[in-house]
Length: 187
Image (cartoon, rainbow, N blue to C red; front, side, top):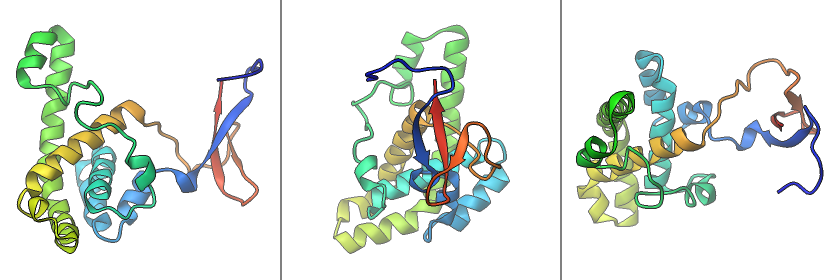
């Protein structure tokens, strides 16, 4: 909450790019980054979102991410209402017209993305599960990945923002004291 008046174009906070979960981080991942980059390039338009969802799913399932404390507070099934968590019957009963068409389209896109990401993520997820002695995830790998990918898309679609950190600094970005670009949130 604000404790004083805010003026137009006043900087409210800054987010250093180094602490952002981004497409660039996803394609830099040592285990799956190259495959996510190839997927994004081949998929075109929404490929970077699919790659980011894959990276988040891998981070949840494999652990050890520098973002783990943040990732652990993001909602999972049941903690947030989202059309991706709904059953087909709930979608059909709750939506109509353009909203129904949009929801069905989104669910189909996420289903396709999940099948593709399962191929990419399975080796890393199984290896991590084996190293932890997590036999249930080893044998239930497809289901675990499907759940994590859906969770990732819910989080991305409800919490993400885009900003081109590679662009030259403009009126809404600055270099902080460490020479690192940050995004300023303005009113």
